[in-house]
Amino acid sequence: MSARLGTSLFLFGLSLLACFAQENRPAAQPKPQASVSGDANRGITLDVAVTGKAGRPVSGLQRSDFTLLDNKQPQKILSFRAMDGTKAAGPPVEVVLLVDEVNTPFIGVARVRAAIVKFLGQNGGKLARPVSVVMLSDSGTTARTAPSQDGNALIADLNRAEFGLRTIRKNEQMYAAADQQRLSIQALGQLAANEMPKPGRKLVVWISPGWPLFLGSSMDMATSDLKQVFGSVVALSDALLRARITLYDVDPIGAAEGEMRMSDFQQFFKGVRKFDQVQLGDLGLQPLAYRSGGRILNASNDIAGQIATCVADGIAFYEIGFDGMPGDGPNEYHELELKVDKPKLTVRAPSGYYAQP
Image 1 (cartoon, rainbow, N blue to C red):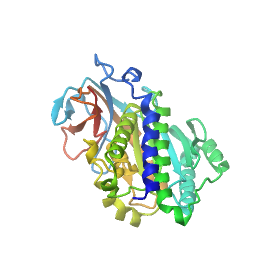
Image 2: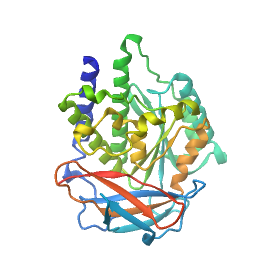
Image 3: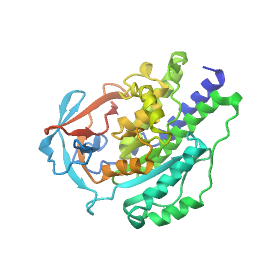
């Protein structure tokens, strides 16, 4: 790894940790919205999607149908609520469509915009839930409008937005790749910070092939750098969980290339337990989406259809509240597993959390 890249990664980790330092102090943690726990600092709310064989949301399940395991130990479910996104019960599910102009080639961005217009224009532009469009460019993220259910107004605003594509010189490709990762992670962290005060669930559909993973690069990193990256994994994972963000990746590049890259990021799906196990790939878009309970859709060229598949998770889902266990030390990883006492059902939910003493 080049010295320039190492410096960039160090600054990236440091800036991300600084970004989350304020939010991650125990005194600043908000109380869980659906927990009846006596310990507000450890109360955790999980947004759980259950789908059948055809991938459609399954409704009508009861608390007794679920079993929650925390580090393979049964955990008591303290609160349970079946949510129907078609009815006005509780805060509406918010959808955020993010156009990634940092990691997507020009022709890909044009296809993404056209697909979003197609999605927003369905049903005459009358959207079932609030939607916002966010643009990511070199200057950071820009929310085009406030969340709206008027698809036609969102289309008009998107058509007025200018392209903000990057210019990468050939002699700076390695440095530029690290810069792409830094910009992307900071944008996701800022998005989580912005969404955290808002009640309810958020579906963030990040339309992008993802940022560079730097496979194998951790072997060249000093212990201090590994600790910085691990701290970023902890901070970002905690922010997504507390903001109740389910993250999705829709790859606009094409089905063939997306399927070829699947093996690159599958190795990072499991949560990182210790700093000396961390790799930069653990901060990739696809692993973060998987660990949040979201989906990775890269096997189709129908971008609008893939967006609709992600948004369908807001039709019917379940809020499950429990008390997280205290850690024996700082940043102790706890693996979560949710089981449903029904055959042939798939459960997607956040796969873990980092406990504190």
